[in-house]
Each structure stands twice: as C-alpha cells, then as structure tokens.
Length: 184
Image (cartoon, rainbow, N blue to C red; front, side, top):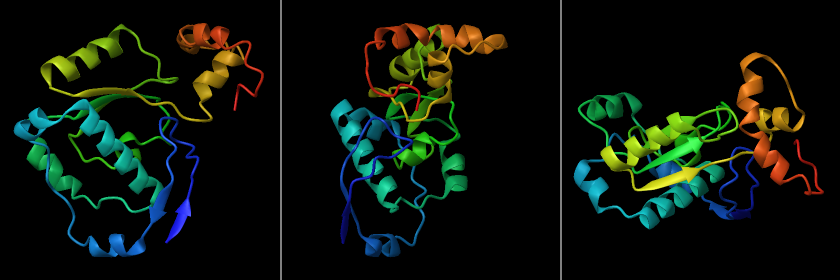
C-alpha cells in the first residue's frame, strides 16, 4: 500500500492522506443501486454526513470509488429523494460533487454558480433542501483555479458576467492584504 497526500485541484474542503488498496476495487463487482430512504435520512446527524463525505473523498482521491448503477438509482429515486446534504459548489465542470464525495443519485442537492457565492435563489434552495427535503448538512465547496474568482480579481467586465463578479468582489477586497498569488 502506498500513502499519498493529494492536493486535489477540484477540492478545497478537505486535504486528507489516504491509502490506496487495489484489492478493495477488485472485490466490488456488483454495482450499488440503493437509494437513501426517508427513514435512513431521519437517522443521520450532520456529523455522520460529514464523516461519510470525508470517507467518500478519500475513496475518490485514491481511485477506489463505489461502482453505481445510475439507471437503477434513477428509477428507485423517482418517487422521492431524501438527500443527506446540500452543497454549494462552483459551476466548474471539473468539480463533479457526487463524484468528489463518492455519493449516489439522490444523496445530495447541489447548487452551482460560477464562483460559488450565495444569493437569494441559492439561499431559498438551501432552505428547501433542509426544511422541506430533510438535508442534514450545508457544505460550501471551493476549488483551485476558479475562473470566476480570477475574473473578479482581474476586474473582468463583460455583459452579465460584470454583475455576477460584483458579488464576489467584496471577498476579493477583504483579502487585499494577502501577499501570495491570488488568481491561480
């Protein structure tokens, strides 16, 4: 077994060392088709969900993810979904939230917007996820090499992007004394 510490480009929430064990992947031959039930969701605590995400992220970074039967999960979740969490993430296609945390269909609600900032629509979606759908955790996930953050730092002006970046600029201003490279 090799120990690795991966500074994952698509993940700014956790940096955890992990073990790679290829035998575990070989043992998983039957794809998972289970979806979370309302009863299973009700038993979860925010700490348990966070622990599941940390463990799922370890699997993702080590390349030993859960093999899932997505078609079957879609059919099984059609009558209802009972997410563990709601995650605010960036629009960036390199950050597939369910994959990053090794979660199945129906396990998480994901709000995506370039620069992963929150606005009234995102807050309403988070309220829905928690108060009506029973999500146990709200997680904001950033990543490296974010084009929206770079655009706000570089003061890009272009159509509707200008108004969107204006919502990020207060955070840029708050970090103006940071001495390292800001727009990577």
